[in-house]
Image: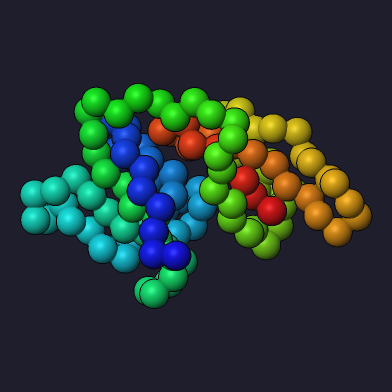
Amino acid sequence: MLHVTIQTEKFEAEVQFYLSIVGLKMITDMRPMGMQMVFLADNEGDTEIEIIENPEAKPIETEFLSIGFKTDNIEKKYDELKALGFGVSEMINPNPNVRFFFVKDPAGVSVQFM
């Protein structure tokens, strides 16, 4: 998989969410070339999140699509997002070895942390 594209009217907030909250790195920044577009990933060559500014983009409102990320400490990430004022779901624990929760990014994409 090459990338997932998110078009948003909240470009800067979206970029900061994936840099600061998710912990991705800037792989390609097209802003110096006059385009409000960036590519973020864990590392060069990994699947990327492409974020494009689009003033006509509407918030994504579906419960049937999510992007998932692994975190080293699920409890710490949960508490961090709650403290920052994000509306996080309840912790979901479908079996003894799996725990996860969801939060919406600034564009309305459902993001899962495991």
